[in-house]
Length: 80
Image (tube, rainbow, N blue to C red):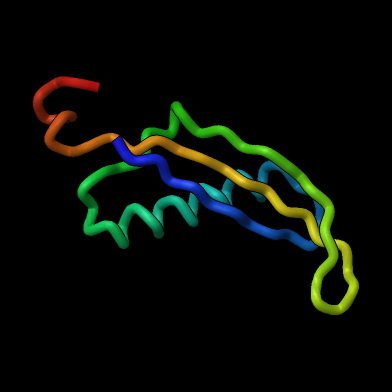
């Protein structure tokens, strides 16, 4: 089982947008792995926001997420 880790930075604090952006990044990561595992969204956890400063001194908000992957072969065999 693989654990996907993603980080997104937004110019404002917005939980729902952060979740959507993290999900999009995890999908991108899982697709880059040739689709051997798919994200198990029931295991998603998120931390943030953490305030940080951008390159021009602006305040940014960083969110981090983790999602466990589920192997396609295990899924076909009926294992979770």
